[in-house]
Length: 108
Image (cartoon, rainbow, N blue to C red):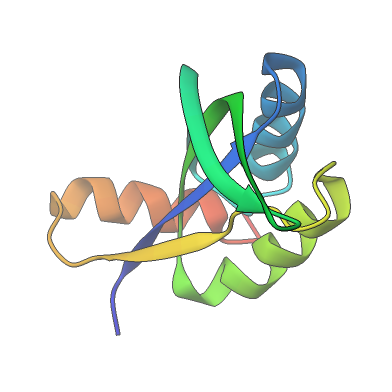
């Protein structure tokens, strides 16, 4: 079991991305959220190939908080099916992992 996760999602605009990022960090579901504006996504939706400008979120959390984070993203996200992909962080600076865990521990 990994110590931490990198969760990816995309947002339709900067305002949505900021709202999600702040909510996730404020609610201790994520230690940090990076917003990468200016990406172009090409995807299939409802039988057609679509293209859209989006903001990529890089969300750092723990496996223990993933289910709550996923539920919150689904509740706040404007997309019917938001991207939600979690990657195991298998190697990281130990001090960073300690900080990350402290940030997402609900009772702190």
